[in-house]
Image 1: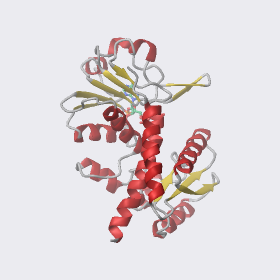
Image 2 (image 1 turned 180 degrees about the horizontal axis):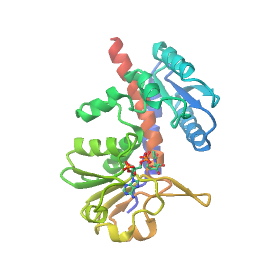
Image 3 (image 1 turned 120 degrees about the horizontal axis):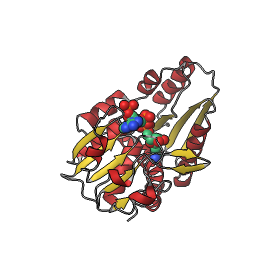
Image 4 (image 1 turned 45 degrees about the vertical axis):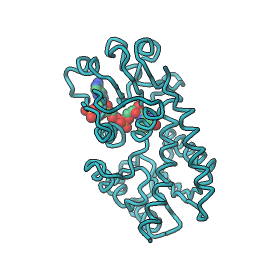
Length: 279
Ligand SMILES: NC(=O)c1ccc[n+]([C@@H]2O[C@H](COP(=O)([O-])OP(=O)(O)OC[C@H]3O[C@@H](n4cnc5c(N)ncnc54)[C@H](OP(=O)(O)O)[C@@H]3O)[C@@H](O)[C@H]2O)c1
């Protein structure tokens, strides 16, 4: 069966839109892009469209490639102080002369819609409620909306980036799964993946997971987005793995739309956190 990210994301988006309508203030996201990375421009565009569709305002700050770190920090500082801005998103990657860590951690944790500040990452690590990064959050929602049991399951996450793999593993753990994290130095990958009840793949290599690496009736979540000959394909060889998996997420229309929907949820959550903190 297909883990239908598109349909699930549409339902979530509709719910966010309905809630936004009930809020008298104009929920606003500051969206910062530095330079002209084509992939980043595509992502920023789809985020702007999604916000627009649910009535979230976007204040865009599009800076040239040679913008300085100081300029960027000054924009973040003014957005932090502006009570009419509820979320701040800096599109990654940043040009190499800018320190991503410094920039991310300049964002006020209560406006950190990507959940990437040390504070929000630390809360996730501690098992506390927090703003979780959108892609891992979207994966967990996708599974839950398809009534897939996570508790006690043997989960293998391939990838350990701070954007996807690591927070996803922590979210699985928070949901009481038994979690293994694999990465490029893992020596017995196939042995591990063969034991997974749920296999989540965030490697960034087209068709990396083949049928012989997957247990029969496993749930397979393909997070990878790879552009091959003008087409988007995942990290999982969909045609053959879908023959043995009980559930599989396609690429596109799987985790991608869930990421955007989760971002919208995060913006709303940031608004509520700020409101609570003011009361
Ligand atoms: N669907 C979405 O909305 C969405 C959002 C974000 C990212 N993505 C996609 O998800 C993929 C991963 O993104 P990312 O930001 O996490 O990428 P990343 O930072 O490049 O991380 C890739 C991870 O894969 C591991 N890896 C590489 N080769 C491996 C191998 N042969 N065996 C096992 N592990 C291996 C790396 O291990 P090391 O740590 O040892 O290097 C690393 O942890 C990309 O295709 C990206 O485009 C999709």
